[in-house]
Each structure stands twice: as structure tokens, then as C-alpha cells.
Length: 174
View 1: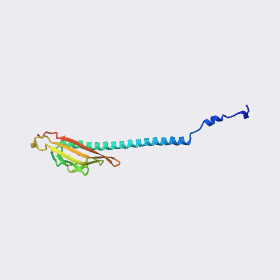
View 2: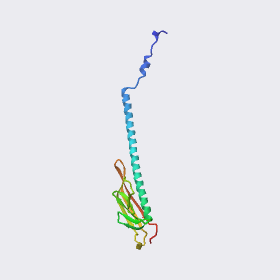
View 3: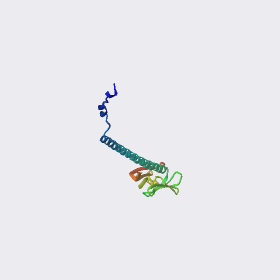
View 4: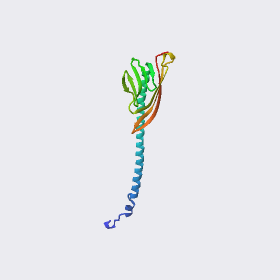
């Protein structure tokens, strides 16, 4: 075969074409749209997780403070309440009182004050309802604690809460 007689099959080169500019623009546009949706969903999940962690941390802190309060109240004596403050003598014989210090739950033991809740927990209402504190009433001392407020969840957002608990003195005063 001589070189002059050899012919390239031109039709094969014409059938193998690349993508057109329109096809590339459509493909990139679809990819960008899908990635925008995925990124939005991811950011929303991060926000929800941060909010849940903030609420959980604040409520855990408040729960620990209430448990500390009720434990010392149960073992105390000589209860007195003004509605927003609660005082008694603890098992060691020291005067203890609970109340609000601004918007945090505060405890005072023998004149030394400390906050029981962290700044992410903002308490707006603290109420103590005491019954049976007098030995003449033939009732066991019983205190009901009502707390309303909000928990900061991050980025300036907060969630409201309302907590109710109670404590009964362990030793009998009847």
C-alpha cells in the first residue's frame, strides 16, 4: 500500500465531539444548586445542634443547683420563707439562705454567698412556698420551689423554662 492510497476515516473524527458550552453551563449550574442546598442543610443542622447543647447545658446546671438546694433543705431545721427567699439552719448548724442575685440563683451559707447557676441561666421568677414550718401545726415541713426563666442557647437566642420541685424535711418534727 502506498501512502497516497491511504485515507483517514474522517467520519470517526466528526462523531467524537466534546461537550458544548451550553452543556457545561447547565452541568455547573446544577452542581452549584445542589451544593447550595446541601450546605444550607448542613449549616441548619449545626445551628440546631448548638441550640440543643446550649439548652442541655443550662438545664443541667439548673438541675444540679436544685438538687444541691433540696438535699440541704431536707436535712435542715428552722425553716423560714418570705416568698422570694428561703432560710433555714443546715445539718452543720450554719444559717443557709437561697434567693436571687440579679438573675442567678444564689446560696448564702454562714454569711458567705455564692452563685449556684451560671450566666447562661437567667432566672426571672423564684418563689418558695413553705408549709408545716411550725411545730404546733402537726405537719411535716414542706417547701415547694418554683423557678421561671430562660436559657441562652448561643448567638443571642434563648429558650424559656419553668421548673417546679419540692422538698420535705427528713427528720420528724410532729
